[in-house]
Every structure is written in structure tokens, then in C-alpha cells.
Length: 419
Image (tube, rainbow, N blue to C red):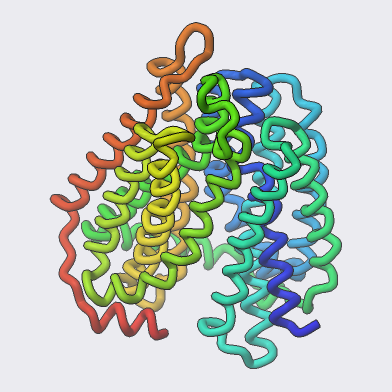
């Protein structure tokens, strides 16, 4: 097999594992287990909690102690074992530590898989900027394939989804040990100086008003992302309680409908260079925030029958909402940071979105839904839930438009995009 094909398999399996349960765990939680929304929010916060520290810890191990491909294999082996335990959990209280341990092993594998791919491509003289994106897009395809697999096998509301994820995790664990060797480049060096440098870099970034504001808005948008991942699938499942919607395609195969979001994501990536050049980074990020308002608003008024077009349009808009902030935001960090602290700045951007923002979004939304939008019999008022999410996104968009000051510089964008 060629190196690119081997790395394509790595990317596909890496996100297949996540796609097998991330979007459908809500259906298992609410439809089958009938556990509460407040506790469910805590489950989704496990991704953010693990993202706060585990990628850094595993990155240091891969830099100084053990080969990255071996660490990747060990992590997926342990993650697969924990996923096998999930169906045995019979309490929402127990589910939290189990999913947290699973995420502790899974979250750092995303950056480890990237590291293995980058190192392997560089070692054979490939251009990472040119050759990695066509490999990485297969990760999104893997995520979509997992959603379709779980949906077509009718496992969305069952514990079977975790067995599918565990099987893929074991497969990738074994496969990881066959990948090109990626030895630790800094073996034997001290972490003390690196830690002091990171602290200094973080302080200098937050002292800059524009960067500090950007990171705050990154956190607020990171919270919005968790809302759609956590509740989209179970929202569609709930329509099976309404006789006129029970036999519609969207209710029978919600994960397939939701996968349109990921398909859209792959397409909007291609549109980013045009939008960045034409409108600038601030406007593109603002478009993303308005897209979040539409994403939630269309869900509020959509249904699986005559309103199916709203749900599908919402899923298409998701690609713009997700890509336009995450990718243009990363470019903004690149243009605004000096070369010596760019790695730290990108790390903080990820921590604010996937760490702090994810934790706050998961926990607070779960509590709010439980307290204000759940009836005594457990029924959820989805119309008002989605409208409240849309209102939140609109407030964030208005504040961003007013408070965040940035002059568009096409040359800076082109320089980074070209690099």
C-alpha cells in the first residue's frame, strides 16, 4: 500500500470511532434509558474536560518518551476496552466517569493521528499542506460512514452503537502498530523550560485586547457546537411519538439525515478561500455566527414531513457554521501571532473552543433544558429549546459585530492560506 492510502485508512478509522456514537448517544440516553437532560449535559462535557489537558500530556509523551504511532495504538486499545463497558452501565451517575475515561483516551488520538501523518509525509519528502487535506477529508467520510452504519443497522437507540465504536477502536489499535515509526524528537529534554515558555506565551496573548476578545468568542462558539451534536439526533427521534411523523424517513433514520451536516462540512471547506479573500476574516466569522442562528432556528420550525426541507437546510448550513469559524479562526490566530508563539496560540484556540467552551455549553445547556424545557412526564419542548439556542447565537453574533474590531488585510490572508 502507498503511504497516502495507509494514512487515509488511519484518518477514516480515527473518525469512524467517534461517528459511531457521538450523534446517536442522545437517542440511547433519552429514548432507551430515559435519563434526564441535566445529567446528559455532563456526559458531553467529558470531551471538553479531556480536551483541556490530555492532548498536551500525550503530546509531551510523544515528543519525549514513546513513538507516536505506538502511543496512538495503546490509546485506541484502552479506549476500545472502555467502550465495551458502556452498555453495562445502568446509572447516569456511573456513565459520567466511564465516558470521561473513554474521552481521556480518545481526544488526544486526534492530534496524535495528525502528528503521525505529518511526520510520515515529511519523512518521504511530501508537502504536508498539499498532501494532507485530501487524506484528512476521509476522516469526515469515516464519521459519515459510521453514522450510516449505526442508522441502517437500527442501533441508534441501542447499546450496539458502542460495540461498533469499540470494534473500530480495536481495529485501529492493531493497525497503528503497522504505521511508519515516529520516534520522540525531543527524547531526554526537560519539560521545565517548555512549561515556563508556554505560560509566558499565554500571558502575552491574553494581554492583547483583540486576541483576548477573540478567544472569549471562540469559547462562546465552542458552546454552540456542543448543542447541535448533543441534541440533534434525539430531537428527530422524538417525532416518532407523533402519529403523522412516525413512519417518515427522518424519524426512521435520523443519523442519516444528520450526516448531511458532515457532508456539507466537506463542501464548505472548499469555499473558504473565496470568502476569506472577498469578505475578510471578521466577516467570515460573523457569517458563521449568523449561520448558527439559522441552524437552530430552522430546527425550531422544521418537522420530518412538510417541514423536512427546513431540517435538511439546517444541516447544510451547519457546514458553513462549523467551517467558517473553526478554519478562518485558525487563520486569524496565524495572522495575528508572532512566529515564536503561533503553536501556543493555536493550542489556546483549540482549548477555548473544544475545552472550556465545550464544557460550559454541555453542562449549562443540560441544566437549562432540564429546568425550563422538560415537562414532568419527561417530554421536551424542542421548539423552545431550539429558539433559545438561536437566541443565544444571535446575542453572540451581535456582540461580536460590535466589540470585535479588525481591519481586513487580503495580503495577510493570502500569505497564510498559501503557506
